[in-house]
Image 1 (tube, rainbow, N blue to C red):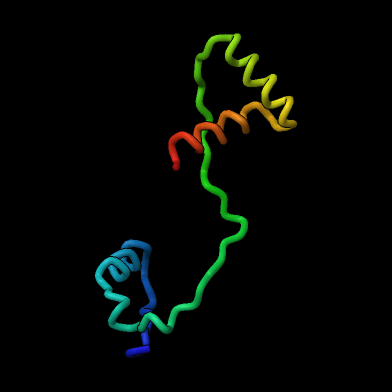
Image 2 (cartoon, one colour; image 1 turned 90 degrees about the horizontal axis):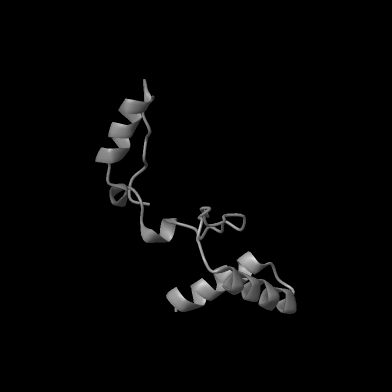
Length: 86
């Protein structure tokens, strides 16, 4: 630690926001001061979408998902991940 960080008593959120916007934490901390942190319950946000597809394709996806014993939406998500997040 380089020098102690003394936090003032903030009168309002705007004053606190200005303080944090104008401070350089590198003046107060060394990389060795930090500790690894884990967030085991943090999940990526998901968003509901609507997509139109031919009924025969949806039926085929549902059949495949049923054979794999997984929900069909999970099968669609995993297929999209494999395609776009290689």
